[in-house]
Length: 217
Ligand code: DX5
Ligand code: ZN
Image (tube, rainbow, N blue to C red):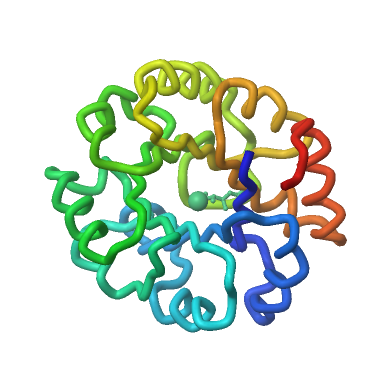
């Protein structure tokens, strides 16, 4: 298992400190980029992500909840180990976004909303490094986990077979459901409120590792 804490619920006035507090328990840092159009919320864009990129050594897991991801992807100054993920619903020709991300030399991820048929990502499984399964409607942190996601993770695991594509799950994950999510086949766990909504984010991240029954390596 890999843990990707989402900073959406962290203190935006002190993001660097918030990230440093949990860095030893994180494998990625998850950034939710929202444009107020693809999702009904606005967060931040490349300027913020790029300025943090210079100060943090952990890989970035950048979740683009925006229209026209192929247009904006090149604005992110990514490293080879970073992941740039776009939504399959955001464009008519997803391969354009995959090509734009590949050109940057980082990993490419594809995501889908909870009610989007899983089969929409199947044609791209040979072209991406990761599929991000949403277990809440994208837009806000702190929502309730949709248990239907478990079946989708299992089905995706089956479809991926031995292709080596990672499955990430995002939304409503906490100590109470991380076990079944990992058991269903998720390898990258995104967690926001369960970590940064806690008065002690480091302790909360440790609780997630323990609840998952995974050795922290
Ligand atoms: C929701 C975002 C998530 C969110 C997860 O649109 O994509 O990454 O931050 O936060 P929690 O864990 O609070 O659901
Ligand atoms: Zn996200």
